[in-house]
Each structure stands twice: as structure tokens, then as C-alpha cells.
Length: 134
Figure 1 (spheres, rainbow, N blue to C red):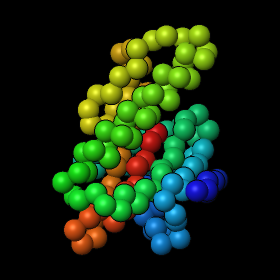
Figure 2: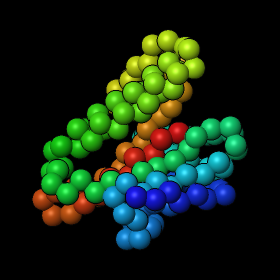
Figure 3: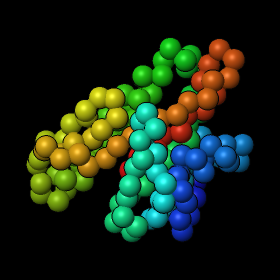
């Protein structure tokens, strides 16, 4: 597992997709400047350079069939919510963190992150998953 740090890229998900053969399970692509981030249903994801976390993680869920795609979404979303909850608590803040299914993370009434998950199907199973978080 390693982190690939890019000074800028149009989209960490797109970069990861173009380099899947060189990436291992758990590798993370991160950039402080994402110029053409993507969201659900073709929406764009805008992030001010250097002011946001924008990264993607490549997963290789070897034995999960396509029907289990939402399980991966649940794991990613709940993991992000858990990490945010821990970070806030360590800073002395105890605001509620919640997932607006399937892909938004809220603190109180404010959206703080979106998640774009893309799968590649290989035979009877998911070949790889790219989970972008911004």
C-alpha cells in the first residue's frame, strides 16, 4: 500500500483508472489541486486548490459479485464518517456526523465531503473499485 502524491490532476479517480495496472490494493492517489473532479451522475466536484482533501483509493475486492456493490459503498461511507467523527472528537468538537446515502458526508447540516465510487467488473466479480473522496 502506498500513496501517490500528484501536484495537480484533473481527477484522482480518472488518474487511478488510467493506472490501475500499476496500482496495488489500498494504494491512494492524492492531490492538493484537482482541476476537474467528478461527482455522481456526471456532476462536477469543485475544490479550491490547497483548501480541500481530494484523493482516491484503489480497492481490489476479489470475491465480491456485482450485486455486492452497495456493500463497498457502505464500508467506504461509514469509514469516512467514522474518521471524521474521531477527528472532531480529538479536537473537542462533538457535532453529529452522518451519511446521506449513498455518497455524502454531513457534519451537522453541512455537507463536508462527497464520495464517487466506480467499479470494474471482471467475470463474475468486481475486478477493482476506485473510491474518490473530496
